[in-house]
Image 1: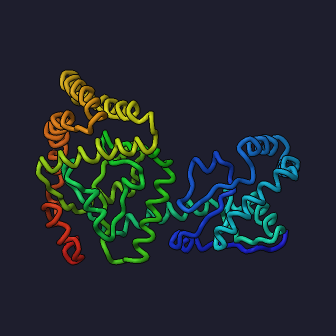
Image 2 (image 1 turned 135 degrees about the vertical axis):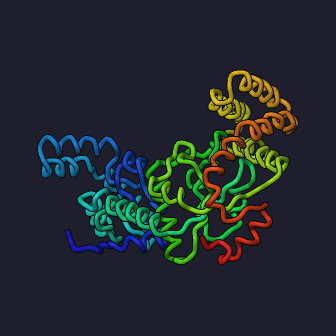
Image 3 (image 1 turned 180 degrees about the vertical axis):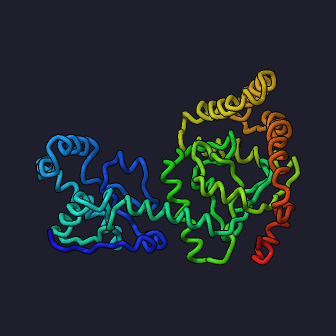
Length: 369
């Protein structure tokens, strides 16, 4: 094979959101990839499996021979056409396989022979992943963080979205961070989330090296996604900004986010199936905390919300949800949060309502730990 371009400038790839052509098999891509990656595999899952079996049975040469046999003229033409389309859309793109070995070099050569040249990532996916894991480790040890904390419904995400120098962990996890926080979007793979967090840290330190990064105060899990241990540790030591809001404001926000907007998302995603799916979402999430609520309280809330679904569907009336939401806030969420905050009282930098904190947080000197 002729000598073709190779890149090892991993930082540039992520800082500049360079489009990435991932030629691994779909099953590999699903297990973990990068935000700007597009999967156009050299081998499909079955072909990869067969070649892997042949490699273990008879060695590399036999595996290569089988790969060439499986790459019929029609399949080869289809693959090249897909890669050429990627190159037309992303002339600045690069390509990789798992280790930067035979699959990516074969892809690169076939493309080059067709008149298109894309650089190959040295070390492939494995090297890019290692770079991001190292970035995560280093930045969590050095980067100053400030956490926006507050009771459920105070609007922490709303505040975060109005500020600069932030990283939206819940947005990256496709989850709002509570029992009722599941969205219509599936959560990413754990590796995808970790990669996105590392890239966010890399970009922040590149553009604003001396500025604290604002994060929403999170528990270990955001839905089924776990915060990386190094980030968990850094957040445990970070100072807090406590957002406050009245019970009425919090109730209204929970109704807006978890009932009205969530139902709109379900309609957009599921059409005629939305009413049944949304009802299941509401009641199933209540069931998740049944043991903590206790049987009697759970049964009461379940009956209230089941009854509230019909008027909500027919007329948009949310009043049937309000007593249960207020009760959950006061009896379930607030005691847990207040206890947790009491254990961290010495780390509070400031507290106040959204307008007060927004005004102060727009002046970086006010947020120096």
